[in-house]
Image 1 (tube, rainbow, N blue to C red):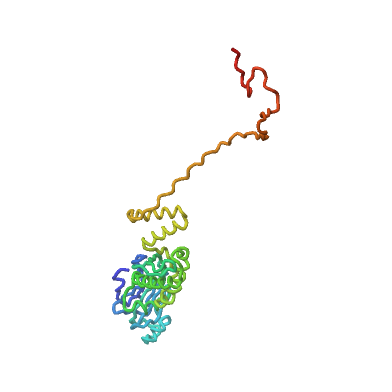
Image 2 (image 1 turned 90 degrees about the vertical axis):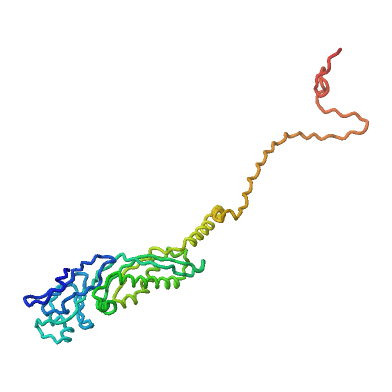
Length: 322
């Protein structure tokens, strides 16, 4: 809104218009609370109050919140300013000027706000013992009680940026994350499958504290929980031994030896067994029992035909005659 419109003096020729153009960029540079500045904070009955969608207007008189208006076009009159009228004793139906501050509050949903741990959290793991853990994620933010936000946060400030609120909420999220991890008593190895459960418990743990600021966190996400590099390397070696069997253990031991500069010696592998020679079976020999002969007797001849002429013993050819 141009500055000349913000400081527009009261004129008697027509009603004034009180509004907030909300030109702030969304995101971290967005504005949550903005005060309508007038000379001496002077307003007049009969002025038009324009409240856009996603806004809320709150009137403050001498530090006391009096009346508030939702989206729409409103004519400032005694009938819709009951508290302020009673405080100032304004004449009914008149257009007398009065002094009051008008705060506009953005009630739209602020999305894609990031949170993260600036320093590692010390978490006791049931298997690994104390470990350092970092966490990252995102959340959304909305004002659910504009009057309470002005009372508890804004004070006398003319403007409150989203950065101011998000920084305060990040500190709360990180603080409650450490409490949630300590109460969960889950192993670090099982956390990846419990992000949604941890985020839900974390958001519920923040509910009361955030409401005390007039705010709410509709969604909160845990995107990653990371361990130090040396702990991740140890877990990788451990998983290789568990899931890779002897091969994984050998690789892990070889890697340990390389990292130690060769100081750790590995036992040489056993040589392969020698091949077993094939055994050729011997030809079967017929069994022929012999009958013992008395002493001095001639050996018995085996049964069968006698050797023929011209044949020697055992069928060998006889020598030729001279």
